[in-house]
Structure formats: C-alpha cells, structure tokens
Figure (cartoon, rainbow, N blue to C red):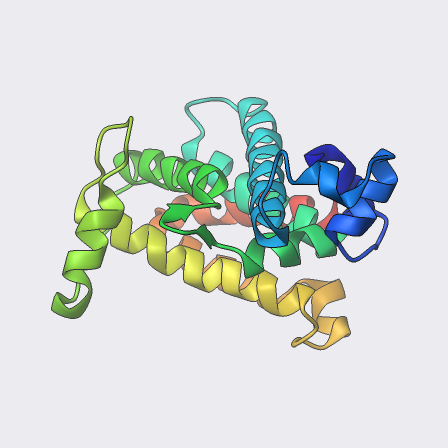
Length: 219
C-alpha cells in the first residue's frame, strides 16, 4: 500500500484512498483494514520516504572516510538538497507532515544529520551557542533521544539552528519562493553553507571543503 502510494506520488498524482485502491486493484473499503483515513496513509508514506532518504544519506556518507567528519556532514546536506530538488512532491509531503501525533516523522533523517554534526563538533573547536532561556525546556527534550545516548543541550540547539537555516533554504527552493535562477546556481544554499562552515571548521580547512562543496553542487 505504501509503495503503491509512493509510486503514484512520484508520478505526480495526488494521493487519495480511492486512487491508491484503484492502483492496487482493490476497493477503497479494502484499505480500511490498514489505515483509518487518508491522513494516516499520508503519515505512513511520509515516514517511509524519510527512511529512504536517511538510507541514501548514510550510503553517501559511508563512502567517505570516517575520519573526515566535516566532509561527511557537508556531503549529507548537499545530497539531501539534491534529493529534494529531484523529488519535489515527496519532499513537500514530508515537509508538510513533520509529525504524526506526538511522533516525529522526520526523526530518521534529522537524527542522522545531527549525528554527523555531533561527530564534527568532537573533531573541531566549535564554539557551541548557548541555549536561550525561552527555548531551554524544548531543547532539553529534543536532546533526549530514545534508544540512543542524549545529546548535550547545546548540540541539540546548534542542530536545530542548522536545520532551520539549511533545511529552510531547501524548502524555499523546492516550493518556488526563490527565483529559479538562484535555485539553478545554488547561490543561496552555497552562501548559507559557507557561513556555517566558517563557524564550524578551522580556517585552514575551509578552502578544501569549499572545493568539495562546489564539486557536490555540480553533481
């Protein structure tokens, strides 16, 4: 059912229970054995997409030396952007459905990007931003990761800011808020990434990382 829905979405169709049922060769009533409504189906599809994206990011990063933690973080972000631009309907669905009740749908890919950032901060002399009092309770909750060791609150806050910044640019690119020429040139995304690299890495490493960034963006 989820795979059928994802195929329809990739082909540009609007997802409806009737449409998914027709593609599966069953009656719409037959889908109610698996989901109670369309929202539940969309949540399942969004979660499946997120898991696939995370798997793709892991595969891309594992091809890079484990010691090259900054390059791994950089490549993960550029590959996420590349996927989003090539699969815009899927990205829009995940973007529109960040949560299902109290459960985060984007936990898989977001947590992986955070893990890459965590590795980066352990190898670089990163000045961690203080958590503002107004965000402290929420950030402490975000730092608690079921099944994994909790992050320091400052790391969770840094990751949240990176997500808002880089993921925000990708969202603006995909949804058409940025001029198409700026999307094609990757000018806004590149400038935003350069700003983060300047804050996160040593100055003597920046030139080599910019070469990696430009090669990835050209890919």
